[in-house]
Image (cartoon, rainbow, N blue to C red):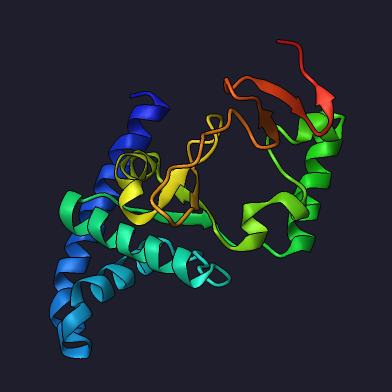
Length: 194
């Protein structure tokens, strides 16, 4: 069995166990918060599945949208939505950007993967890097209901909370600046050939 197939199988088992756990926690959640029992049982089960997850620092709107989306994903479709990265402090974002500059050799090439703090939606508290891949696929399909949109072609995991019901234009990569025909013009001031 190849590694990808084993990972998918493992993720399905984790999803079944987490949904089962949420079902078992539902009566306790109902006693605690009757009107929000499903959301609470989902949060408890997902906290056990993704113990390192940190939702602090997200804007109230982004947090509410993500909580609603992950609750619906779990109860309606049996899908898990975990967060690998949400809000980042500017110093953390700068460190990530600097590391990518060192790795890739230039700020322009680093911007294909990481933005500096002044441009990052993670620093603003509206970006969500989600997992697993099946959860990201679910969010890409259903995210507009919650004003959560995938914003970059090269990052299947990156979504942003953009209230207002108008999907943002998806960019090919972070740092891309598009013309009217959605052709990348430049990145970090460097003009790209068409």
